[in-house]
Length: 438
Image (cartoon, rainbow, N blue to C red):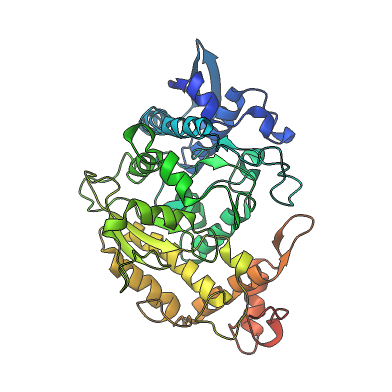
């Protein structure tokens, strides 16, 4: 039996970066911050696929949290995990979020709706904010990265992102793009431009946007002591065993569109204005399926391939059947764009040194039938037509009780699409949903 112990960090900082024990559902039995740290560390170990770890202990000694791992494990991998785990929560990375929070409190803009309801979800309750960097996600094993807006309050309550509808839907898209189910967790690691857990669909719905682009740019970007977003991106985009000969970092999906949760692409536009394409009026663009490359910092060693995409849950919220599948919010267009994003990550895993425009063109050709991703989706393969249709059926037919979930499993939705006339069209024939056309 092996034993490996390492220091994670000082309690003064970690007590602010991990959610308080009382936030979590009582079924998790958290009593102290050490319990919370243990839980999220275990989640990260599972996400990274570290085998043979049989016991995790977290203790607080002289104001410092220490983690002890026991089992029959690969010592080299565990040491690599421990070093990067400490680094994530160090002063050069996650601790910068504390600086942003302190400045917000100084300016009296931290949780401006404290004590009041901001949505109708009874589980969220009144508006509450807590710092929440990437917890329970990959530490060393990520194969693609996402840039999102903020984590919903339900996450620290449940102690995991996997129960969130956003991540459940994203997992389906990843699998159907061709990623093995055992590897899906490696494509779900993300950085939020506002690392603050708060009530979902309540802090960012216009006109009541309490976490706008300005908030990210002002408090989690800026001078070195609080450039949280860029520092975390720089760290996570290059895992510790990233081959030295690779031209690029991991690819990055920048998630959000004008129809739903545009804050992450909005921050990206303000942060990297000079490298973005412009329209004929000189306006920098961050359009869905726009691809390119950038350096996180001007002196970053490698460029990062990026693709702008929809927020992962947007299709389920605003997607519908319309008379024109080439325009939003048609569900067929949503599904194709989202499958392009998932395929973009898969293709980079297979060939990490390809130009992002080439990778985008291949992904778009698969799901749209053209390299630009223009017009109505026209997958060439029958199987892909049915995949797109089945995913659309899952998003179109949704049950809210006893808890939100698709009415049909993927297999059931696939069968509906296969037997339909016309085959593979989720918006026609006997599988057409109730009329919500616009």
